[in-house]
Picture 1 (cartoon, rainbow, N blue to C red):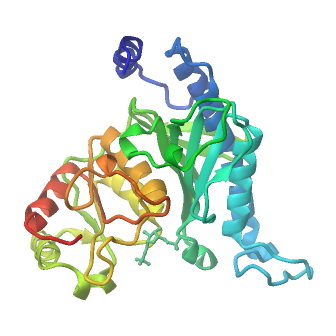
Picture 2 (tube, rainbow, N blue to C red):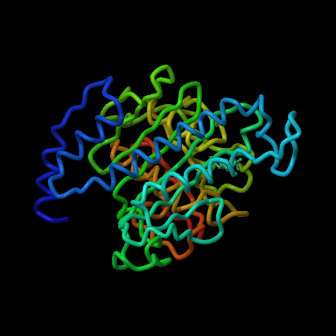
Length: 344
Ligand code: AHG
């Protein structure tokens, strides 16, 4: 980090944004804190928020226009349907490509890295356009998860896979959008975590949760009980400890929803290594890393059971990782129970 960046970081720690500020104004205010910034990152965040509004509209209307189900079916008007997760993928890729500040995208929906053609752009986006999509047709909250990185290859050249194979600690921004009873956009650029709730009457995201901090010790435990028999002995012992502590169990099955609730109320989410899935289920580059960046900025922790998520070196763009994330004391407790286990 350069001296200028360190100075900016010091200043930013003292910055307190007012509840009620629009996302657009917040982004502009924050950009003024970086004399060296040219506004590209701000533009990407605006592009993401625009795509989120379009996707939210599609989600809200999906029950009526029939795009919850599988692609290839016909809706009540006899029109070809596009699955909602495909709609979301197209909308985010389009917004990020037209914004011209992103040279490459990796998406859960696409096998290969996408070259946007913006070879003069210096940023990369990794995203899960619609996470928890198996919940869509049950009207359960779902989300978008994103990470933004600086490219490694020279500006003006086509992006390479090495540009996207970066550890999470290199993120310049990370966050998520939760499509729930309200739409909420939460992100960090490494200067704290802020959440913006969408006011549909004026079409704006409004700062609703400033400088968020997760509880040191919560009482919510989120995991899929159906995997219990495949958990390690240490994980099972931790769950017995949770029962003895009288923690409460909450599991939506949509990572963004489970994560956001635990961020607000304090708790732990885990999708650990199991005997059937030693690498876990969740994706490192566009699920684990983004949320690990957010939780650390909120005072929490994220680990794969061996070490910090943000330090993991990726070797595949769709790589999976175990994820244990949330209130710091709870993550430490899990680590104590599983520290001598070998799962990879
Ligand atoms: P998908 O988008 O395929 O529905 O995956 C959802 C992810 C994540 O959002 C959630 O935390 C996890 O998978 C749930 O997995 P289980 O159903 O195995 O518990």
